[in-house]
Length: 480
Image (cartoon, rainbow, N blue to C red):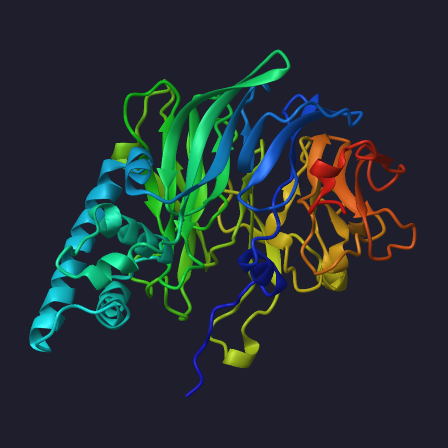
């Protein structure tokens, strides 16, 4: 019998699996400078700052994969990658909870090896790892990164010591990539790195600084690994004494703060749904959870949450909150019951107004669907600061604008016709009337180098290139 499968993000998911679609240009709230992530994607990118004329400063940090600004435009949060090949260094970075989990799992694995060797009347052999331990790990739903971390743990003193062949096996180990969040402040022409507020074996997907600058919300998980780890929504309060707090589990990657900074809005799987590593359809809810009360006191422990609308669960769904209280989110438009052939194949944008009952509306007119295509990258949408426009990558590496006042859909410029379907960077707003994006240098949109441009009053005025003077080490693997 055919099963109803969840809608995937098509080319968007494929590009994400390949490590593509970074947000290479992130403008400060005051629009004066942008964080630029340049260079090849070996282990993160090099961080630079550029002004609105494209003048690029010196390299400030390495191994950066994501940047978020504080409201004062003087501080940032950096997501950074580090490849670790020894247990002592890994133990310095990981939380006590994660270390205890790895220790417990490693001890169970050693017991499994010894039990198998005893049953078969011979010492443990290298193949026992693949045959016995891998089965144990699969049953425990341990991620690929945790497997590599456990190997480092077992090899810290060449255990099991009784088997020299197994000890030799630990001599060839895979480095473990740790993703950490680090606070930093701009001081003059330099960047002063501050404390690390989070470190884990899975990637950070999104960082959202609260409008007041008093808290950092972020999502972390590994939903694309062989044994999927659901994405968690975490919270760090600036100046607080508590470690990272868990807001919700099994959430979509892209949440947002409410305009008043008191609540987080996100999409989470409804309780009782299939496991995250299942291919079965999962139901979800657009959820609003109060984090701070009217006095600014933290009320997360009280679980003041409200489910605002139902949708299908997608790990890539995005939420953005408007100043007037409306909530925009990406998802699939579906009417149940439905046959497998009738299940949705395109991503849509919806608007929800919590102030009015039963008001979830479709944002993209049906007659404009051809311009949007299947919406493979629609989940990368960003709202302009004046909340009049939404920009997102369209088919063929075009940049598409959706008017929130008129309802029309427009392609902004010639496509960036490089290799592949994924955009080189996510379109970003410098100011209410200034859109930043990548386009082909060739006027005909032919394959080849690209440039970063600012376009005032899109789609009316002509774009202005700002990356022409950027050196080779910035453009390599990015614009070339």
